[in-house]
Image (cartoon, rainbow, N blue to C red; front, top):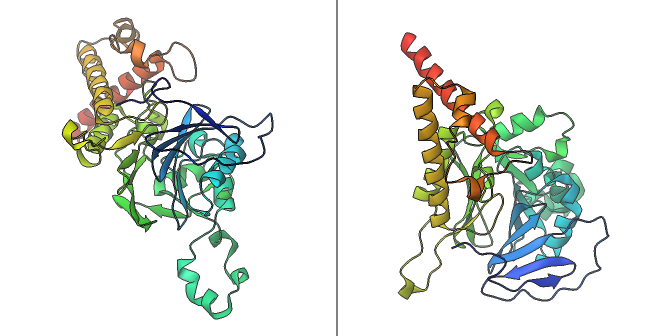
Length: 348
């Protein structure tokens, strides 16, 4: 159930492109953005969940009477425009900013959104009740919490130029980091090393919306960051985990239920069928490359064999920062590393 531009009318909201699914977005008035401000597309996917799109990247925002939850912030260069859009969608402060991995194009604006938000001050409630003095609360605990895996904190801390405001303030190593806000369970679920070793997906349980981060890009072959622990098998395992544990398929038409909605890193709102198509592509390419490796083919010979045939039109690209050739190269090197690890294990 992929929603595209031809299925719904586009509206204009305070200089922001807006698309509503099934319900109208209230008219909001604001000053038009500066010419240098990037365009932010807005799609209302549920009554309380919006998909913002900036520079082709998707950001999820859940709103309610207790505040807003933001999943991925987009790049730092778009932070002001994204924040202005969120403030029009929600009059309550941002409470949580969730980082699904450590890529700066996805999470570079996290610090700015956190600074503009406000902590729930759960641990400081007795102090505030006693003297109502927020100045007693440490500065780094007045802003919205930034949630991410421990691996995300480790990688961002080692990245040159990253300021402390961008680092997760709430980290986890367990399978899930869960909290409740706006009467809804929010689940941040650890994934196998897929795009990287810091991947998470986010489930808004009551709204039935899943945000996948970089493990699912509906417009490209996935980026497998070998340097930071990514692997093709991890990609397949992660997509399978999302399909098996988090995403429910559309129910029979008589029930008039849309099933779980999936917000990918890039592209339109998807469902389980789109994830299945993506997973089948990953599985087919992996098996083709695995077979060629078993035949003793070199990387150049694998590339020449075109193991992505049948999927290039849908996911491929010959230009940009991540091409079809880059994907094949990553799959080949990932599988070769797995073969070497198995061989080393047998010898040990």
